[in-house]
Length: 371
Length: 132
Image (cartoon, each protein chain N blue to C red):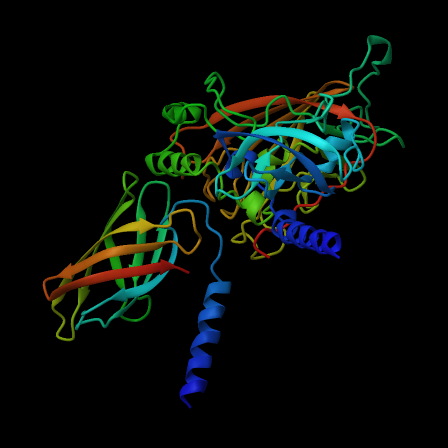
């Protein structure tokens, strides 16, 4: 009776913890404080294997002999699965040691920077890396009937672009240190990230000081816009509709939205008469070929989202010129020039590369924290 | 009757909350609803429409037939201090020169607010407005 009651209590506590956590999608630094490193030893009570973040619940014995249930938060199921881990790698009853930063709000949660079994074997660590391609496996850049490179799927094997070499945006040559979410190592470097107008710099610094906790991409599953779509960990897929001279850019995360790039010579204006004053998350994109590089020009963005990781502001005056070059079968070079006289004092540029991954986009959906 | 009025106010308030749109661009851009208390010339309630064109903050107070255009506006990111100047007319057609000074609070929220004071040649008082 007592055991069942304790199990029930434990289940209730876990369920109470799981409910808010299941919807907790966020940048790691927004929730966890690197300065509050915590070391836990305890017994696993539950493994909640679901996106956006996996949680392992652990009963930790306090010095006075009482038990505390802690949540150890981990990466998504997608990244853990790619790294060879499964929901039953850890089971209730396993003895583990977990360490990492604790939650900023003082709740009993840590980010599982390292999780190990009692025998020292590390588990649930992310070892996911882009697929390596030997020279023998290199294939020529696929081309369409018009002789232009295909940026998307070339055959039935499928494929998409992922593993961006940069997941942050800063002007070329700035070399400002920041983490993969775009959080600056030193706030005093903020003015070097981009040629901000004073209000935009102030807002960028405010977002940085709040550890990007207000990111609507995480809080409300807002669309990433054009640039951030190329920074997402789960990739993008290009679907070229050559007959209708347009290309869909599908996102491998978020709420499965997509961007349309028109290649039929139209102007980047509203597609419906009188629609020009309806700014969009992905703007209005038109493209032309410059040799083997697809040059995409986009205007007409709304202001309801963050257009890049790290919280750089933009206005509806934002226009982008993006250059996509498939330099070899497995590599896509992305270059972008940002011109937003509403937020920046001059146009500025950046760029990175993405790698080709065979297969379908991973299944990963954003969850709205405020719904 | 009192209960009915309370319910109606609650429904309207909820509706207003639900319609607060995200706005991640210039912090002042948008519609702001609030009060300039003690304003015997133009009433206690105020609606501000503000815009940002990349160089200047523009807008108007109480859009309508007797709207008051914003003459000058500034936002200092150090402390997010707002200053608005506008010239309206009273019933006799005399100029009422307003200065609104305040500070943006909860900058990160779509329904951020401005708190401060208003003053004119006809009076002064507290000012509050929240973005709709």
